[in-house]
Length: 350
Image 1 (cartoon, rainbow, N blue to C red):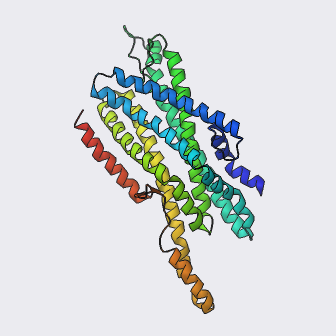
Image 2: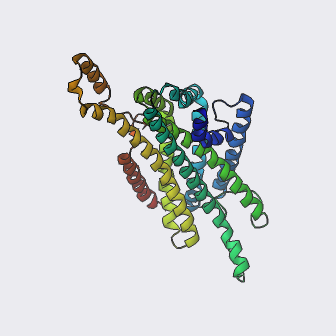
Image 3: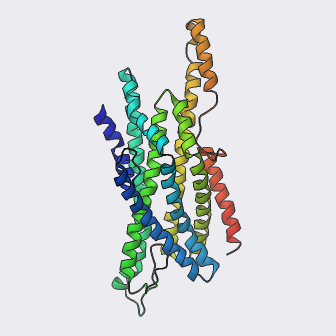
């Protein structure tokens, strides 16, 4: 059974170890990888912050702000795990321990189904994030490639992977800067993926368990405050990216980059909303299954016990951002609408 569990959770484990977040990692190893991940994120934040000081117009500030907000989300995700280490370890323990309490092969098949679904979600999500990152960053090489294939009298303008200032001649050190940017972006997004896919794993595992209420409450308490900060930053980032997209429509290369960036953010938010909706649906299934069962054929004493179970399952289990916003498909559209409203407001200032 343990081999099967390792198969389902191996990808999650590798990602978390890379950023020092795996609960069973040795303390020194965990600290080393944690500092390593924060170092790369600090590199991004510093060069982006330096760009603000050389900006001479609002357009430049908006252009820099969107990726800067994304980089600021990374430490929020990392420290969510650090500040909740005991809860994270408790939840992770259940990923392995709960399998031992399954009594029938049918129950094991159900858990295998959810664990396999989770593995596919993890692979799809991580692949999408990396592909989007590589697509966004490598488009900065397009002008250099065109200069070789279709040279002009003058070199085409430099396009960096993301807005930043390196205190050196960007033309002379272009390839060094691009290499540094791509490495930093991949490392930062690895930390983001590690946080997100572990959350997805918890949700899928809870959905596969009958004892959904107990673990769902711990999951909600662990991530609620962090998600409030992340949701605020994501909404801001979506709005600013839309402003950038609308202002760069006349430049096809830039427009494509910001469209890819916008879709990646939207996909990121959708995945959380989808998992939240899945938890809601599964928590309500217990009530519906009891209601549609042949409860009237069992003894009165057991009927009363079912009444208590139904009362407990009347209210859906949810994942919230600060106890205010509920992650669901319905509220996903609300956030998109809010981002569009903020986009309209910000556009009036540009």
